[in-house]
Image 1 (spheres, rainbow, N blue to C red):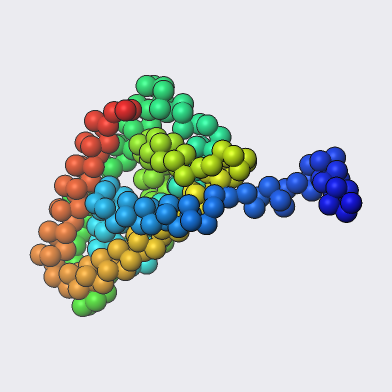
Image 2: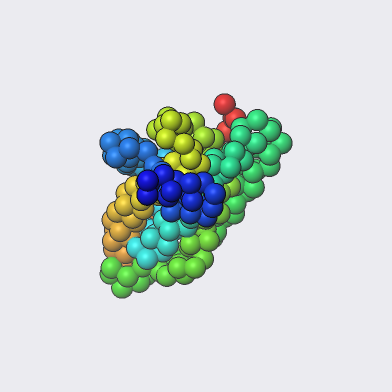
Length: 233
């Protein structure tokens, strides 16, 4: 009787449904499988982890972790877009897709220019040039949200782990997005720490620092070209 009364009260007051609805998520085994696949995707070579690797080597571990935090923030945007159906716009609209990828490609070209012309100086062994945590965080956010392929990938990847029978599909998308962000932070964070240590030692040599900056510039140009040539399919 109490359960029936409670159900009736919840149905009559949608606010009471919120604590119950927010708990709707894919089964535990689905989350574990999704997390494992996400880790594999994060460690496989790609533009984002390569970006973290180079920026961490250039500016240090703290800057790299700030970029990782920015990339994860960008994933919130992509997860929300999938949950709200906005990613479908970029998957079907050639104009929206092209506009976003052009902005992202131009941003990468600008980063390449900065890397080519960055001043070099020998620093004490193990010390890396500071990149500014807030600046690196914004760089990570912008790098992520201006890549329309991420949103389209999410739109194709996340639904494979959703069970419509559970209801609250948008909330299931949210939980999967959270799991992917955790996987990203762990793997990319490890990359940032490793690259930051190695880069700190390289900063003791002007020649090594100049070579690292040129390598970063070439990689950024390659990533810009890759993004500019990306197709919707």
